[in-house]
Image 1 (tube, rainbow, N blue to C red):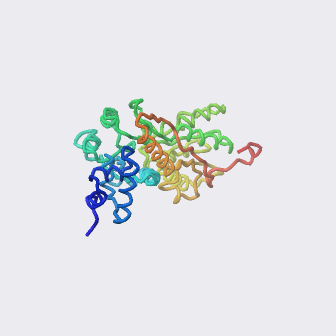
Image 2: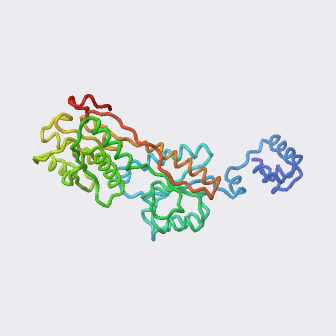
Image 3: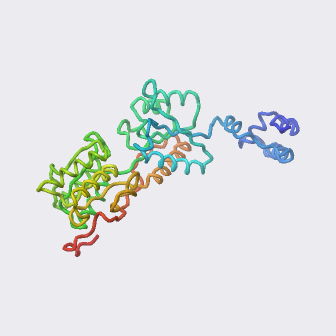
Length: 346
């Protein structure tokens, strides 16, 4: 028969409450009593139940990862899972579990986080940008609930968040093109309302302009981020007389369409047209030739979110609002320093 906490209390001559406090490290218990209880625990080979310990501490040792999980989410938002893995990897080191919770079928905005907080289901929450809305943000702030938001929410300065600087990523892309000698660049992005696309475009345009190369409005195209729309936009850009030297693709779904357009137009890469994209996944490995990429390590971003969450749990008043995880350039076969510009430093 399994040894219980009551068995330990009886043999040590103390209350169950005292044994619980010793197990949970309460400093109000005398050293003599603590030593006696620990000796009995060792003698009886008693193993405290992890959930009971958490309950005694009024902690679940669980963090909720809140996100939207609609059909085919893994294909539409592959980076979210890499972020989640990074969060789990970091928090596991603090003996926390991470529970994935869906918000896609909420009866009203903020319903999930409201019930989670009221029910004491978790010690904190990491909120992916896809699950954030004003109501969810307000519930978190009202309850002063430990949290970390993935992505700059732009909703309230009281929220704790981390994000990638997408403007900087756009700057990296433009700096590489300029170093290679491409001064006539185009940008194919997502919808005009897509914040990440707009930020990356801003970085590209500002950097090109600082180097004396103004991007033409006709060379900026907006799409629904599908392969077909990327193909159509690239075909239109490359079929006219005012053809760009290079195309910046806001994501690699668009890049997949651009590469097909270039192939169908029988243009040589990068001699006649160069292009680059952002992030390795989901399609950069199947694009031929292999594209040059401005990559953002989403797994590391998840780890940074986990670190921020752990800090927030220790210091609830802590406010972290920062950009993290610098982008890096991965040289591929779709850009190359022009021979006439070989004197330029990369």
